[in-house]
Image (cartoon, rainbow, N blue to C red; front, side, top):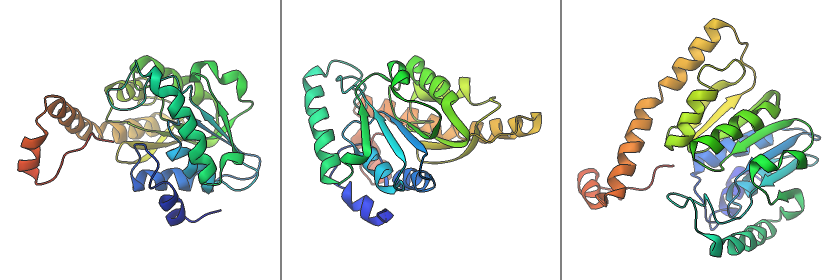
Length: 247
């Protein structure tokens, strides 16, 4: 197993939306697995997060990366119409995994997540969701793939309290849920653990901890609106730094 600093250096040149503190969450979750466990990633893009997960996981842990590389849901405001880039994304994904020395550890399922269930057997010990950010597919990933997380397992969701669709799906499926406990977040990457006892008190505390993230969500939405209106230079003059799409 590589160290976190080594993994961070290995993905420095890999395109994707993942900050160092988010990479740390993925690294720690994967490193905590044991031989025979399974890690499933939904949404791999060009392999940045895949490399982190595969590098951290002990030998004997199965790693499945689900991504259709179909030219949709590629990144911020890239929901559809990128079919020409799809083949390149797939080629670069494979090349990046090979360069990082983890290609042999990852099984790539080139399919949409809702169609990939039959290609993954058994329970999932670590689930990382970074797929379609629209409400319906995001909710389906959280609901259907979340149901496959083993008791005590970990579910991580990217663009939580940042994307409107993902946040809406979290509010619907996890806010008042009986199973997943909100652990915390690194920017927009949230971590949940399938160990909530389901009592009224634990569910209420869990809901309040998630609701406490909504002011940060409102700030992200406002920032996105300002960037879409091309008011980034105004923000730069006010804050003294270049604004970036929140992730």
